[in-house]
Length: 150
Image 1 (cartoon, rainbow, N blue to C red):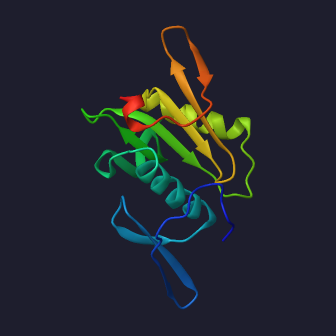
Image 2 (cartoon, rainbow, N blue to C red; image 1 turned 180 degrees about the vertical axis):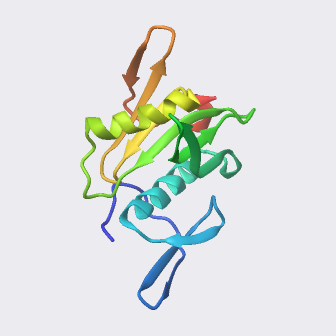
């Protein structure tokens, strides 16, 4: 796997034949180690270890219904009253962050109506804050800590 623009963490990886899995601390189980999962696990540990997000306030692969179809948000973060406040969308390091990626996360936000969106391919990270009152958004220079979000 590629080295990412995220801090290292104590990863638990197992191999069974040609199947490689990584432990997901949120789902509490081993999951297939794909390039996107490599980014997700690094980013989740970054949010927990560096940004102070409580593990108990995070969910991976959150299902949402959009136009009658089931979709999955990569990671959803919740505030202290367990209301969703942030959606994170991950792509493999080889995938460019394009308008299409932002369109995808914005569609998920139609359902969840969060205040913050993060998109990362492990190399580039973007965080924006949504201002519903003025119908605008602002890209933030850094990813806020949990305390700054709540």
